[in-house]
Length: 83
Length: 184
Image 1 (tube, rainbow over the protein chains, first blue to last red):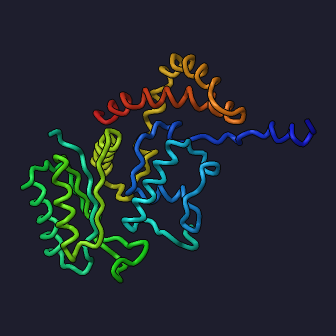
Image 2: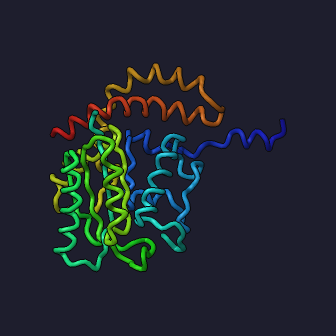
Image 3: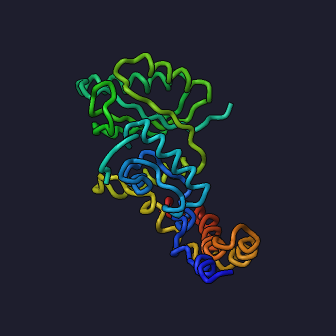
């Protein structure tokens, strides 16, 4: 194994955690627009799990909540300079 | 047939006068009651700016109904929404136990904090719970660490070991703790 490969393996997760598991949040409200904005980028797209640190289960729930909020025009489908 | 918990949000035309919006809301409420629904909560979220124009309108009046009903009446209500020209959008969601618990907590939180008109985040609503989870964490930790070691990739191991014992303790302890909070 080369030295480069070792340094890749040692790279930490930067202390990222799933905030839903950490705080015991079980339900993600689709009506809470300000909370859901944390999971969108400035174009209104849903951020990937590797960026937000969500576990798979909660990432799915977040995605469902965001899509519902989009349908109710609480969040846009497409945007620019959302933040 | 058992009653399911539902939540409906619908957007009304903003151009309607106050009386007309009230009439429209009352009409749907009556429709539900006639078919045997039990209203748990209704909330007027008021006029809000839409994120994108719907039917060339940029604002709408949001109304929320939370009710318990047998599962066959929801379709009838949605057909009524579709027929009504003043309803721009509607969304009906079936609430699971976590959703019902969240709504109960939110209402109690709002009753206790009437000044905070802006929406609180879920973290505020559920924050007190994790601190109470600490004493119970130790018991669950031992079970959880063994489970965490057998799971998944090497990179995630460190994270899982930290997160899993805390998470399991919190998820198990939160619900009783949260109920304690709600009753307080």
